[in-house]
Amino acid sequence: MAGQIPDIIALARAGTGKGAARTARREGLVPGIVYGGGGEPLPINLPYNALLKQLKAGRFLSTLFNLKVEGHEDVRVICRGVQRHVVKDLPTHVDLMRLKRTSRVSLFIPVEVIGHEECPALRKGGVLTMVRPEVELRCTAGDIPESITVSIAGLEIGDTVTISNVTLPDGTRATIDRDFVIANLSAPAGLLSSGSEDDDAEAGPEAEEAPAAD
Image 1 (cartoon, rainbow, N blue to C red):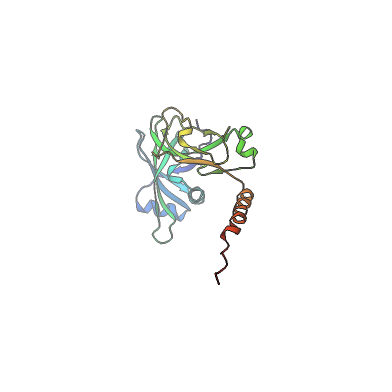
Image 2: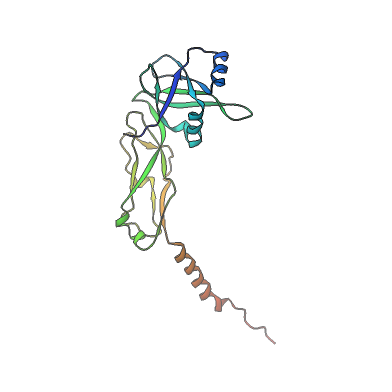
C-alpha cells in the first residue's frame, strides 16, 4: 500500500451556482465538486495557492489524493477535470471523483532500484540511467503499491531493464502494452570518448589518400 497519499484540504461550500462561485474566487478560493463513490455530490472550495502548488507539481490528474473536508469523513479522490480561465490559464473549477477501495485507477508509481553492489556494470564504472523513474500502473484504489522494485544485480554494461523484468503486484498491470525500457546501463562517457579517439587513430593511416600518379 502507498503510505504517502497527499492531502487535499477543502471547505464545504454552502451555496451553488455562478454567484457562489464568483464569491469564492474573490475570497481566494477555487470552487469544486466531489461526486461518485455512492455519495451525494458535495460542493467544495479549495484554497487557491495550495491548489496551484499541487497543479505545478505535475500529474495532478493521475494522482490519488486524500480529501479532507471539515465535518466530513476523509475520502480518497482523483481529479477528473480542471477548468481554467481562457486567457490567464488559471484554475477556475475542479471536479473530484470519490473512489471505493475496489475502484480501478491509473497512477504513476515510483521505481526503486536495488542490487547496486552486485552490479558488474557499476563496478566497471558504468552509468545507470533511469529512463522511467515512475511507471504508470492500473490498480485498485485499495491496493496501490508504494513503489515497484527492479534489480540490476548481475547486469553488465549495455544491459537494460524492461517492464517484463519487473514482478508487479497482484491485480496490477502497466498501462502501456509494449515491453518498454525502465533503465539502462551504459559505459562511462570517458570510456566512450577514448574509444572513439582510438577508432579514429586506427582508421587514420588507412584513410589517407594515396599520392596522385605522375
